[in-house]
Amino acid sequence: MRATATGELSFGVFTVSEAVGAQIVVDGSSGAVVARGADHRDCDTAPVCKPRPATITLSGATEHVYDVHVPRNVTVSGLRSGAKLTIDQIAPESRNPAPGPETGRLDSNGRDLFAIGGRIQAPAGATPDSYLGELRVTVFYY
Image 1 (spheres, rainbow, N blue to C red):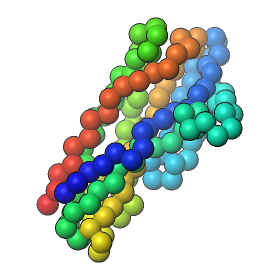
Image 2: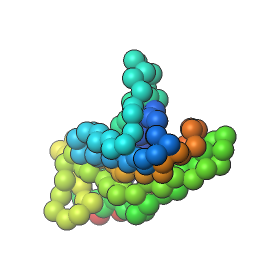
Image 3: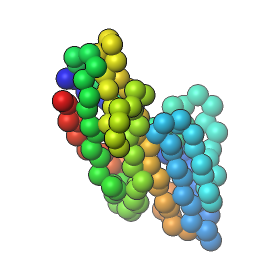
């Protein structure tokens, strides 16, 4: 089986007020975004500005089942400030789900795509920065 990362999880570019914290949820299955307490900037066509789930393409033998394991949360760090934020509610969603949580099935062409969403929470007055972290994904192939 081959797993290829085809897109990174992004919460986009947003601002947080000095008085109220924010949370942004990116849904893995639909790509829908729910933001509370955050103002997203409209950056026209700049891909870095748009919230989106991570995507991973899988290929292998037809109809094989696989499980995806991801951590419950990930800490991201500001590139300039070193400030920390946490991403939680991390959840993989297969486009071709099989029975069971976090499970997918390769289709009749031996392919599938799964997306990973999550939630980031920023406290009131969070340090403006570009935050980066690593999300380790493990795929078990049967």
